[in-house]
Length: 376
Image 1 (cartoon, rainbow, N blue to C red):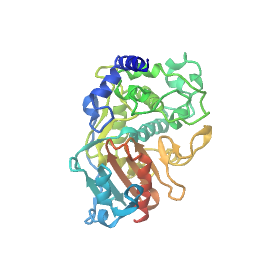
Image 2: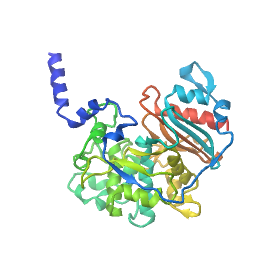
Image 3: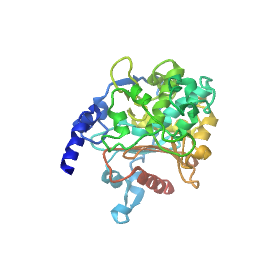
Image 4: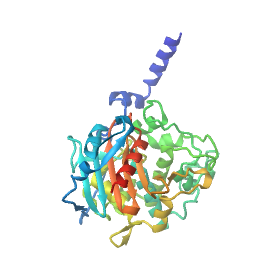
């Protein structure tokens, strides 16, 4: 009997276009998935900002060693560690100088990397800019103020923008990228995110618990779209990408290829590693870019420090991960250990991109970064 039940479940699962896409393109999300999605281009503009180059930037990988539990506590060079752990790009920048730059043999300085969830702090930054500009009155504003289509959904009238930023909205969502029938897979492979967002339900009232959910970030995207009067990509281009002198254009994956398309803002921004580092530099400099205040200092501070209000977690705020109190670090984090890691005390930015390495959880890399920082 169990075999028949399993067969029925398999047949039913194949009726989902999203499950079909999951299996067709290899099952697990990967760095190359963006090639299967429609894209919007985020243009860059001169003058391009360039970090300084150190004459000894490759030596750092030989002099810094890391201790890994999975290597029997053997101290190995950073160069070797990057290779063993399927790292596609690893950059270490201090005082605006590139001290270390390492790429997998199939990648280089001009390669683009998919952010996965490391893009989420960029989305929250666009919300912060909209507040700075008065397009959004406050992060305490109700969601329905900007998205009135949710007024008809019971309980949604209590959700605030801050709930979405802190993942305390109470929205029901299964955020498992490795489960082909999870809500996350529906979002990732789906082609009608606007409809799927309207189909969302609540599992609790807001402010009762923290539950990380890509649905929260997608709703922030809808708000950005509404208050900016254009696409989310246009907003990123105008407010951040061009003003801080990105080296190259970027692309944001869409759910479909027509006038109703929307960016997959919970993931899927493709750009060069060095340009992700510039976003880290923007935060490292308290939102100021060479004399121009791009994001307010208050927004930067509040985003990178603990805020336990509304049962938010102490280690996560406005889509930034918060590091140990001793270090005062913060980071954007994505699937397979994509990182924009910022350590203000030593003016350090670490960028790391990888792919399809499910053995090493992203949290593993936070420990590695602290080891690196302690040796600098």
